[in-house]
Image 1 (cartoon, one colour):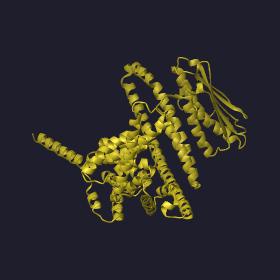
Image 2 (cartoon, helix red, strand yellow):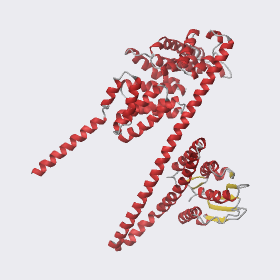
Image 3 (cartoon, helix red, strand yellow):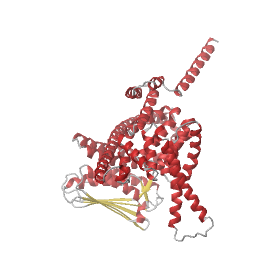
Image 4 (tube, helix red, strand yellow):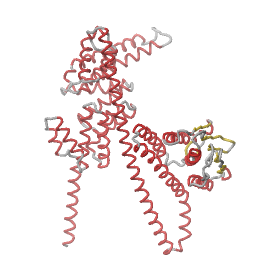
Length: 577
């Protein structure tokens, strides 16, 4: 019985270890307590950065998310985005539930401040609310109401903020920003309805409720202005510069600032180098309100405008640098994944062959049944094989082009090229699992590819597309056209520096769709087109689709390669059946 007792003890130890590990993932690292007790801001930031670089991924996630929060508080949103990206990878990989609400909250806040799509912002904000609890959840709801205000959902904003203002006031919190959002929602709701009534072609004072509507809308506007005044009255109690800026911007937008408050707003903006707010104040305010002469006001408006534009340009450059670095990391990861995928495929292939050999030797009597099963899988294997052969070839060519730009220190060209490549790869990956796609979509993907070629070494090649509405909606096998266009660039593009052209057309004739790739010919190149792997891959794909089509006679690939003109004609059914 000793072995049974030992096994029981071992199982209990494992269970205790798992429970301890689960408990550990829900607690903050002890280092954070020490960091938060540190008085010096720069020292806190230094310690957080060290924590974010910890070899312990759990601690690194907490350090990264707190660094992101610090950057948001300092209005450094691009830097915050970098920390957020690292934190997100770690949080989702380790499934750290305690940090997910803060992750989505910060993601929504950063995206909003950088001007991204408001729907994306509200989606992340709702995720934060769904996972949040207690005071944090109410903070997330307050931010969500701010995003809804920008989206014009004023009634939803009022519903959320009326509740939050009451709860926060009861607990003694400063509600300056919440009242500013609520006041703006009331103001815009009333103003929206007033403008709607004013825009009506015929005003009917005798309409039931006409007077009540006017009075109601006027009350909304007045309540909005009153709430904004209350918000401004408690603004000194707001320690956060960003929150103060938002209150001033809301108040300025609805004209709720007195002359004294306008001057205080301008002083605050210029003291904190918030040049967009300073420009908005100066551009909408008369010189005498600012206690300045017209010449002084005009000169300072120009100075603030220049600083505002410089600030926007700096932000744009920062975003470009961030995207460039992110693209380099993604390209490196893509190369690593591609190599890993190829190794895995090779190992899997050898393993499959070995297993197949053993099965053939051991179970010869089951050969017919196994053969039938293999034939049913052939179509999927052939299609996957076609895609897997064409993608690495294209990707390696593009990465070589990027490397060429970088080696020549053409940084701006490299950034632009990576941006175009990112668009093309994203489009390719999104459609990688789709067997068929519309001609219009495929042509658009070809145009992205052409943009890459023109940025590399084929700027001299003129590219033309002809596509009618009917043909654009026809579905064709995905990824079929790029090898043909690549072939044209390979020969027509290299044949001559002058008068090189490529033309891509599609037209529908009866039950057939005809796609043609024409070019200016291979000139005096020694190697004749049609001998490479690209055209062979397309031919394989045609044979693949012909074999399973109910109209095999419509699947054809015809070529005519000449020194002055080459044509590849691709015919297929106008309906994939």
